[in-house]
Figure 1: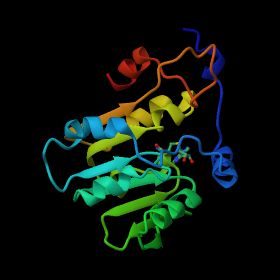
Figure 2: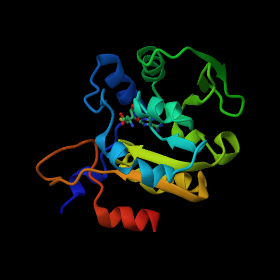
Figure 3: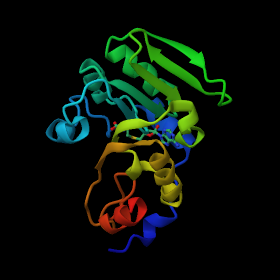
Figure 4: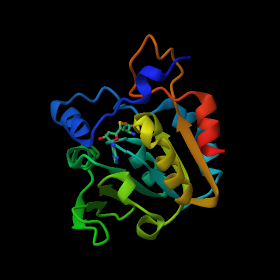
Length: 196
Ligand code: SAH
């Protein structure tokens, strides 16, 4: 397939913030993603108290599911509005504090303590700030990353993973000549070369 038309396209942080302001968030799934339910065992492997990372988290309701199962959830999202809507819609009280290591960033944390959402760019994070994770739920994340940043994104994700962690990735297979999105087409061959 010819992905040339998408390769140089960029969605800026400003454009993402605007999407949230305009309520232009067709990607949000109020009922959660059926594939997480289907593959939950692959992620959790019968363990309890895992640390699960949600890159580019939006207000994904699955963060509450996993926290309710007793796992620790960490997310990152540039839109503060998205994170506030998450806590409001899930009925979770939270507190916020600056992140000393990242200028301008905030951490919104549920009062119960098991959901921590960083309001900043994912590229500002590192394992010294957020630690390492036993599992990753990547839905609407790699596919939302600008094609020119994919290698950087994947390299960072690899540094955030524990040795025996699981990474669930959702992509959409379609003809990039016929459709413009969702936001970017990531062919399977590229996923293999990015993650090795
Ligand atoms: N994973 C969520 C949201 C997918 S849409 C879901 O499944 O519903 C992609 C999200 O990434 C948007 O909310 C956008 O605001 C956010 N985003 C885009 N670039 C980002 C970046 N560099 N760092 C953190 N968040 C980013």
